[in-house]
Image 1 (tube, rainbow, N blue to C red):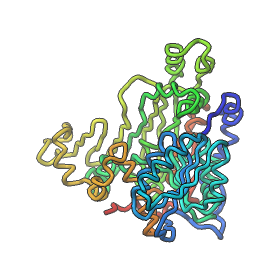
Image 2: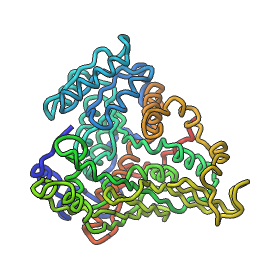
Image 3: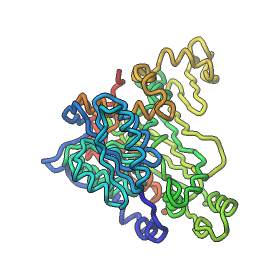
Image 4: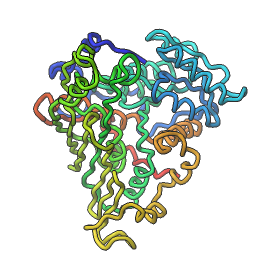
Length: 465
């Protein structure tokens, strides 16, 4: 949505240690900022009134927005009513695609808004949608979500939910005040293996959960070719000016739900974080762009790899790594260790004390590859079994479609969402807390309790059928 020039970006998001400390509002004592106002609603298990037909708007149809737009348009009970993007060609193109999908019956009155930074605000005023997909640059996520809720719509936001602790608290306050959902769309929670592991953890297959490992390791240097528009045109500035774990939620979201963090039994307590030197982006720029190119005029501050360790209220630990620069295969780690065994990803493999029945003889051997067929047959999540044929072609192995399907299903049936607003805040908070820890030589940082103590009353995510 937004091309950020270097000077404006530095002015807005300069992350010196002092600036981070001022912006983040991290409670010194540990947990709450203020009591919840009696007129507001705790949103942990909130179920909004049913919507028979959901009027949907989309802000941002560059990279992720078109997928959400098209899949939601294909579902019964939806009506696409508006599209907003900075660029006219994108807004009109995707409006045309969706109208064609409707075959003259649905999605025929799509308003388009484009050409300036604030047209999405006009869209909210004029169209008044029921829900809005927000798929813009990171800096816009929180301001847009807050305005969407204030205008009476549910907000569904691409990751991360926000880039500062202060913004996350504003999202909490707004959602509780307006009684509108604000869900960060962590699609990886709907991956087949992630759902499999969740089901196995709930069934006690690996015993009491002790430790998890999560990551987003994905070489995305080629995004720097998107100089004037596209993801690289704004994301490169984040890599250059911020030093921490900038993208934790794809790996962390599933592990946090395995452990029921922020729900009933345990929650996030503290974090320590370290970054490597910042070398790879500058080397890539020198190799691939002219000496006078703007990517070669930048002083890259963000370490190539960040490693953070989260400690939970019960003393469990989660390793969280991030690296979008180094030349290496993709990985989210996706590991959960329990007292009876371990589930691990990339590649998917399982080891259990006493062996995996019919496959291995002890926990010193992995069950992997074709050997896992019997485990999938036995433990595949019922949601995956129900929806995989419907969502298989939707993107990222079907996880995108499964996520959107569940959003629409929950809104139409008045059900709580699979990911509540507080979870999105906890998972996104890793970024500003890691930046502050790195700036202070790995000093521990305390997670705010965005639930203000109500996590103890929020039941674990059901194994949805």
